[in-house]
Amino acid sequence: MGAHGHPYAPAGLELPGFVPLKLSQAQIVAPYLGTTLFVVLAVWFLSGRCRRLSKVDRLLMCWWAFTGLTHILIEGTFVFRPDFFQRENPDYFDEVCKIPEIWKEFSKGDSRYAARDTATVTVEGITTVLEGPASLLAVYAIGSRKSYSHILQFAVCLGQLYGCLVYFITAYLDGFNFWASPFYYWAYFIGANGWWVLIPTLIAIRSWKKICLAIGAEKMKTK
Amino acid sequence: MGAHGHPYAPAGLELPGFVPLKLSQAQIVAPYLGTTLFVVLAVWFLSGRCRRLSKVDRLLMCWWAFTGLTHILIEGTFVFRPDFFQRENPDYFDEVCKIPEIWKEFSKGDSRYAARDTATVTVEGITTVLEGPASLLAVYAIGSRKSYSHILQFAVCLGQLYGCLVYFITAYLDGFNFWASPFYYWAYFIGANGWWVLIPTLIAIRSWKKICLAIGAEKMKTK
Image 1 (spheres, rainbow over the protein chains, first blue to last red):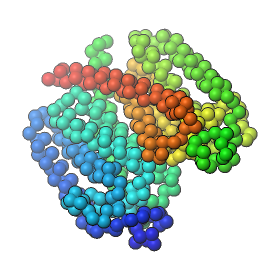
Image 2 (image 1 turned 180 degrees about the vertical axis):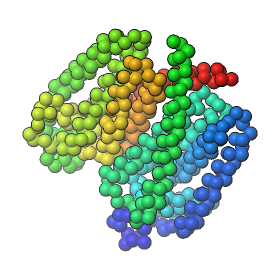
Image 3 (image 1 turned 90 degrees about the vertical axis):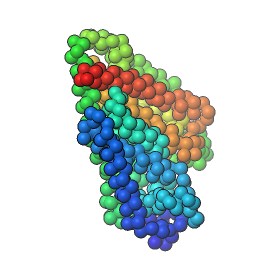
Image 4 (image 1 turned 45 degrees about the vertical axis):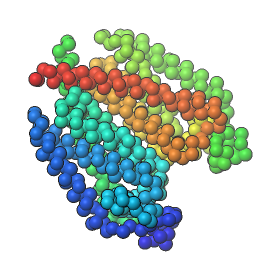
């Protein structure tokens, strides 16, 4: 804990009324990973009942369910509970879900969350409100083989990638000194966010190719 | 000119070394609109020589040429010349193109440009480096009827719309007081930016529909 009563960097950051974390890193990360595993397995088995879905489609449904719920529940809590690091008496939601604790822990990798940096709140707001529901729609679209499935997935991936770009570039321009130690830089700032660069890139490339193939086939037909 | 030696809002904004505008609004806007008209007419007539292009395709080529050049030349000057409002002795580029004067004028509608607000610089940087060249590629893709034409246009539109969202939401969160008067609010902040909400929305909807039709047709074939 630094002189300013919080464990974040830069040490001079003012966080009046900061209430320290109650849980350890393991107590925060384990339930998140456990819930993720449960969601992924549930979607995997349920999607097995849909006819004519490839294994890739079913894996994509797992990803979209996981990322959609993360956007809405975890990131939504950050966006719509501005006082998460000041709550002395957590309510029922906080007690059960512990999501505010996730953000107190994650702020060790990027204190802009605790400080409610404008760009960070903006990107998280767009992610929660637009990309969260759109991700869940993608689960349905893939499962029921809708014709908008690929363009929807492409759109959400592009949103996620644009969000990551804004997130990383603003961190760079604002001083690039928001992590408590190199461990938190690599584990949280780069490691946790990196999945939302890698996976949307792969899905966007796949959707781009599928769409070009379909358009190309249509062109051949009308020639 | 306010007490702090500049015409921008809020009046307390510190801009050390600010060199006042030399040109009037008309002297700045007229060459921009004139150049725009020239680019649009040139692309319109040149695209008339491409076979099998609809009028909508040719109009889209005009838009992509205009918006691509605006992103690269106008917005690129803002991004890569951080000292545009301090230049006492403009160089040849400034003298001929007057682009720094555009930004001094536009800052009356949003002083975050003069103040180099992080989110604004970030959005403009992404727009310049990614969306600018991609817009020019869209001119070529439409003209030569590439199969990636629709998905490329959709991608650039989504980038422009995400950029506008970040731009407007950060303005709101940071106090919404960056215009010198209601005139500049409506003419520059809303009016000038509004085109990059309206037109990308229309193009994105069109590309979405075209892509869904092509994917739907492919599905019917493989049934």
